[in-house]
Amino acid sequence: MKNVVRLGQLPREKGVWSEEPSKSVYLNPLYKAEYFEVLIRDAEDVFSIHASTTEIDSWSNSVGIGSYTDRIFENFSNPVKTFAGLPLNKPLIMGIVNATPDSFSNGGRFDTADTGMQMLYDGADLIDVGGESTRPGARCVDAEEEAGRVLPVVEELLHNGAVVSVDTRKSFVVAGAIQAGAQIINDVSAFTFDGDGLEYVSQTPQTAVILMHSQGTPEHMQDAPSYDGPASLEVFDYLSDRITACEKAGVFRNRICIDPGIGFGKTLSDNCEILSRLGMLKGLGCPLLLGVSRKSFIAAASRNELSDFRLSGTISAEITALDKGADILRVHDVAETLQAVSVWRKTKEFE
Image 1 (cartoon, rainbow, N blue to C red):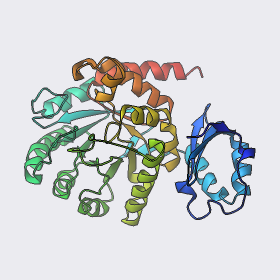
Image 2 (image 1 turned 90 degrees about the vertical axis):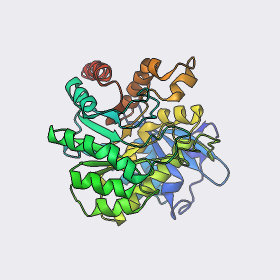
Image 3 (image 1 turned 60 degrees about the horizontal axis):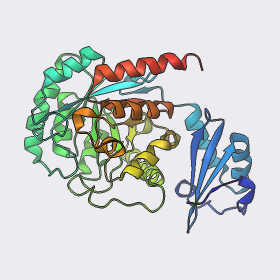
Image 4 (image 1 turned 60 degrees about the vertical axis):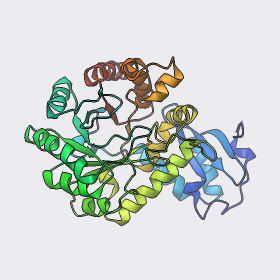
C-alpha cells in the first residue's frame, strides 16, 4: 500500500473510475468527518490520501464520480435512525445466547432463555440466539437439530417481551424463527450459505437482517486467510454486494444492518486494520454492528489469555468501534459493557 499523497498528485482523467467507482474509491472518515482518508485502488496498488470534504468534492467531480461520492457523503450525514424498531440515538447492546454445547464462551453448557432474561435485566436492548457454533474449526450442525436448540429459547424470550435476533445460516431455521416471531435474522454468511433464507425474509416485511462478512466457512476460515490489499476494502465490497442482493430480493436498507465479521477468516493484522477503518462502512448507509466479544484476536494482541480473561481487550475494541460509528455491540458481558458505554456517552456530551 502506497504512502499518503495529496489529491493533486493523482490522475484527473475523466471516466477513470466511471464503470465501477464503488470497487476502487473508498472514504474513511477522520476528524469528525471534516476530513477523510480516501483509498484509491488501481490495478497495482492502493493509494491512501487525506483530504477535506471540499477537496474530495472538487476532485470527484473532475474525474466523473461525483454522484458516487455524493451518495457516500449523504450516508455519513444522514445515518439510519432505527433498526428493527429500536432507536439508534445511543449504542445498542445485543446479548449473546449460545444454545450450543461447543461455544468457546460458555464452557460447554447450553444457554437458555434465563440467560437472555438476565441479560435484559442487566441492560441489553436485544438478544441474539444461536444454535450452531461458528467458532474457527466448528462443524456444520443439522438444521433440525439447530432449530430444536434455538426455537424454544426464542419463543420464551419473545413471550417475555424481548427483541430477538436468531443467528443462523440455514433457511429451515430462518423459517422457524420468523414463524415464532423473531424480529431479526443474523446470518454470518450474509445469505450466501443458503439463499432460500433471504426468500423467507423478503416475504415478511417486519423482519430485519444482519449481513456479516466472512472469508470461508467456520470449519476452515482460519486455515490461511489472505486478502489482496487492505482487508477493509474487501469487506466493504462484499457487504455492498450483499446489500444489493438483498435489495433485489425486496429487502431494503431500512431493514439491513452490517457486520464486518471480526475473526471470520481474518488474521490479527486484518482484524486490527478493519477496526481502524471501521467508519468507512457507515458509507454503505446501514446500521453497523460489531462483534468482538472475547474473540481470539484479543489474546493474540495481548498475552494469549483464555476467553474468560479477554473482557478488558473486548471493551477496548468496542470503545474504538463506537468512536468510529458502530451502532450495535454484540456481547457476552452485558453489565460491564453497559458501564463502559455509559462512560463513553457521558464524555461525548462535552465534545
